[in-house]
Image 1 (cartoon, rainbow, N blue to C red):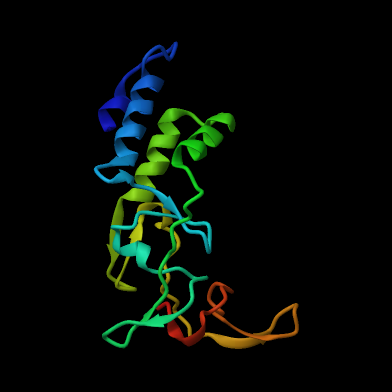
Image 2: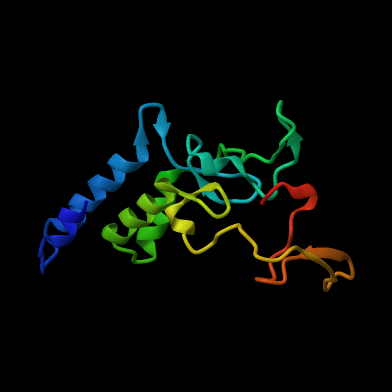
Length: 160
């Protein structure tokens, strides 16, 4: 992967093709496509990753340990190949598409919020240094908001 970035291909005779094959290899698993889109929140996720177990728009359920669970639901009409074609129509290079997909699929663990997350969300930690406060939004409804980043706080503590 990093070796491809070191190749100098001024006329782009082979590098784009190599990255295209790397994208195909990255997104193809034994049981079909690795990358899915949630039908509820439209975020891209990998069902086998720990970070895929939280969806802000999913109905809340309680698991066997008493934890609130809000899981992504795979959109059966979404096709990863159509998504890749859309990215190419936006003139995004195969190199950039590869690294974007790699960042969505590869995950890390945050020791502050104790959550798994895809590298693509490296700057979007769910840890909030302050507790939410209730404010009146434009819809005149009271909404809990984190004052540290002005993000809307989820109901019933489904997120850290």
